[in-house]
Length: 86
Image (tube, rainbow, N blue to C red; front, side, top):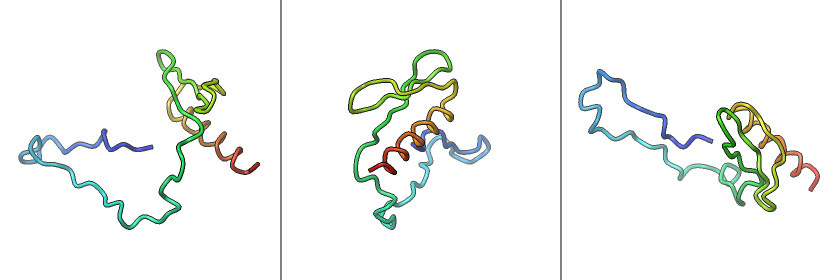
């Protein structure tokens, strides 16, 4: 999930520190793009370059990965499996 915290202006841009970035408008998004419920799994740092995938309802660790991207992919995969069973 992108939180827009990693965006920045180029160093050579005039007034790079005083300009605000334009944020995308959420007005035109469809209902399918807005989450209707909180996520069932959460990626939690568990050490240096190590992440747990925790179930939010019970707090149990359901998996682990060595990179954040892989942990997020596993969390999405677990959530989609549960949605398919329902």
